[in-house]
Image (cartoon, rainbow, N blue to C red; front, side, top):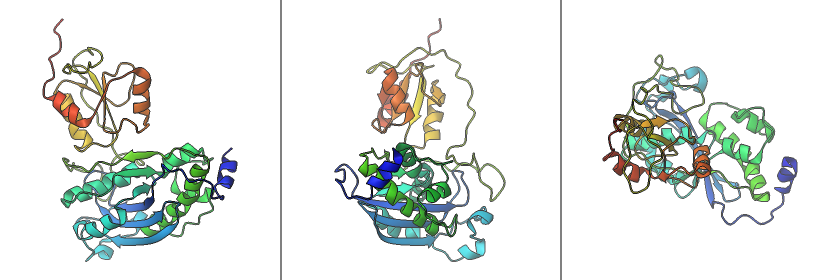
Length: 326
């Protein structure tokens, strides 16, 4: 039972050797949710292997644009005047992240925002793995009414003082992560770690919605994009060692060095069908992290769907066979 797990976590026990040796609990506030939005503040709590706080750090960042939803994060243009650019704080931010697993609530969003800022600054982010506390709460089967940070905090008796302030959100998350980590260790629960890939090719697309508003769907990183239907029938599974064929259904999972939208656009232009989910009809799954345990990776394993990494897929895209005319 979960209650037994949480209670058992208070005893030292044997800490799983496979667990990371340090964590960086991160929160960033942004001008919005779209790809061209910017970070306006960032906070990091560094924790040791058992979740104990080592130190913390906070900075505001000049986004070089309108600060967005001031009514949410409280940072006005006046408050950000004279603040450092992301490039100015990138080195110190890196020092806080280096050698640690990045922990965040809805970590894919924080990571993608951070990765894009590092790409703009022409600096490689030092993050190699991330852990999402939403995913960890699911692994622990915590009885939460929803997956908001305030619900996780309330479950562990952590009091929020300034919601949507990066430093306080990071503090709250660090305090909620500690008992979560200990419960996982006590129950020998697998930590939901995911690989982080710095962006090497990307584009800033125009924002969706009014200036200062959030683009895309709340709680998601990638707003849905309506693509034209693939004009070719599905020729079936990809066979290793052979070329792709027009009409094959291709799905993507996890981080890619080339921005996902760019990869999907190239696949569509080559005559492939880009699938948002994986089924028995999927011809190929593209992922750089085949051991990640994502739903697509798990289904690919169940269905026997072929899997290739991003580099191999890029090579295959150069030689896509035309669809059969019969």
